View 1 (cartoon, rainbow, N blue to C red):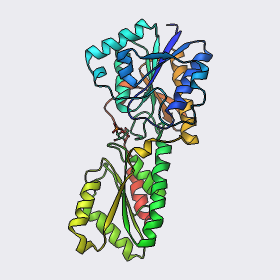
View 2: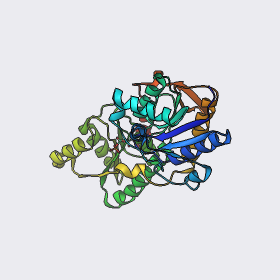
View 3: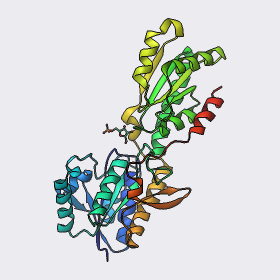
View 4: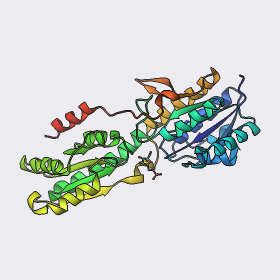
Length: 325
Ligand code: F6P
């Protein structure tokens, strides 16, 4: 099929670098003399028919901006048959031939739905969680990681001055990637991730042992999806204050991790993946995720990634434990 007009949308949690991906999709497509429409607010805008034409100047000056100029959303309506029918009707009414969806796991389920309905659709791997099967790194992870790391570095200085223990909770949904990498890069004494159950008393023992070895601080990085997460840890330290001998203070970095300007790595990654998505459409491909495997762009059928989460490398947790000694 000859492509003349494509749509692009961003969906799910925003990620630093999404704008760079929109820019790459738009300008690569324009270079092929295709028309480009941006869909506002993810699948919600697809269902509502909220499209706007994108020219080269519309995506100018956005590569360095965080968030997404198109807006994002988590749409319940698109999960229904009726919502999907409306979305397809809108795409057909606008004469759109294909779509690029920039987003994470949930968003790519939607890309697959469009593809299954016979509408050419390609996904671009973008989420700060880095849990997407089919991409060893996703847009936004590096920037989010550096934001978490800055918080850890800052906490460490004040923790050392006061011989205090701090716990930093980072995002990641059910994936421990951000916590593990932030913990390694920040030299944390303990890292708690969903992929390996760690009981609160084990964390307390690790911190007590660190103080015994002469450390001036104790830093724990906890993934938000961990079974015994921030709340359980705080409760344990409160209940066992006398036995442990020190208090644990806590910081949740939360959405700060998703905001702000994308670092160079995310801008370049987003540029490569966005451009490759358009090249794949030009080749007649559909129903795939464009991600990074090794240092190359790669495509993986969306049907293969559905419902899967890319696991973190558990050997890195062991390495972090050794290096924290
Ligand atoms: O998927 C990205 C993410 O930031 C997760 O790390 C987090 O659990 C979730 O989104 C938060 O979602 P929301 O912004 O809808 O609260």
